[in-house]
Image (cartoon, rainbow, N blue to C red; front, side, top):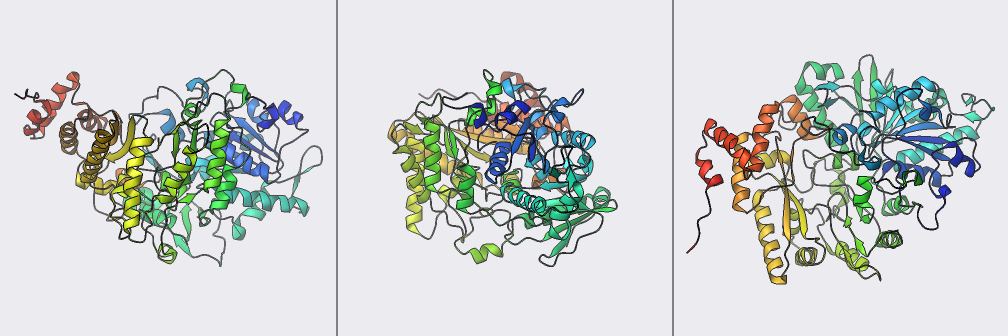
Length: 636
């Protein structure tokens, strides 16, 4: 437990902790697939603190045991309002398995990295158990697992298209995206309902008013559906305040993968609009109804979320245990949400949105001061970043143009002329943080978009700021290694990925090397690459190996493409069609084809040379053998 902190400084996780607060029941009980870390990077803590700020009694059941007598699900009784399920910061299957479907070495969000603390698909497992034990208590799903499974989606681990997660879970509602705004509205409506003593309320054993499923539906669903939620209906509720987009049914998508690809294009376009339509998808005899999202949060609203009274520490129950994900971020500070990169394989914009929501400098500095007071802090901020390190305070200069736009990316195929790419506000934050007494250095651990740094704006002051940012980043904020993500070298693969041409990476590397040489710095640039992405063939990976060898890289940060729900790349991989062109697209689907691509990352390992040589001869590219394996000649 941190110095000066008491057990009641965390949200309660047991009856004893509730009693310390004088509670006999909770208003909302949140079940988490992650360990409970009271930190703004952990979703269950954010939602718990937000509801607490609304005046509600919130309790958390972290990583309940889903075996045996299910005592963890019974331990706190029924909540007065609803159960919420927060399955974890990562999709549970990505968290548990590699792209080759092998168990990962550790679960980063569990104490001591243990593998047995959460089931596969905890959203469904937890919800089914709660429905069995508490048949009349509303269940609300949130987090990335449910958010990206709100409609028909491809499941890589079951190798098939599945319907909305509302069906197998038996839950009442999905909150999609970042959940503060819809969760706050849910709480306010239900509290109002109890205050009005509505006749549809249920009552617990002590005669206290509770929300039952009928009252929940009356307050939140149907014609009064909360924005940014998905629900299951027998008929489509009438709404006059929004236009509808009817998607192909789940059954039609199963019969024709092109219809699933078409659905995805519409879903992604609507998620990238400021004024989206309501989405309707028939599934069996029922309808999944997805309400349009809230507008992007304001700076004040985001500040409020980050300024809540987090301890920033794991719950005392984990004393003496290591939670790997927390160790990575405990001295880091997030500056903004959202990402307008629109990378085809990434779920960030699908979940957080493409519109950047930035914190105020005051809120950031306030959190840095709290970090400085944490046990073990030695003066180093590990990351001043975000989903992408350098998108802070960037948005459309003409918001009317943004309101008419449905592009999934603001920087691909080229930087939008309406985008403000000014790095000066971010530099001001860096300077303010570094000026605080007690801060020795702040590092940038998040990935940097070098295409933003190299973009030539018509405003020369913006270009100067980009150059200044680049130099300051390299000289003052790199901890020996700077992470960037070119992802591939082949232009046609990068086009599918929605990534910039590889030449921009070459250009950025030259700048990086020049600045390091001028400043006498021994630093590395660490590029990330992906194999097996839709549109990529083994020959493309062979050429990637030759190109990166020519740049003196022996690649470390590499991964095989993992299909995850609601990304353009996954839909292309699963359906065989590019959702935006409806052209057929190649994907390496078998383990053998995937491995024949991945091995080229490791051309420098002696044990791979034989296989690589055989594969190059098989594909008719023996010309690359010498380029990969020729020995460097001594210069005289």
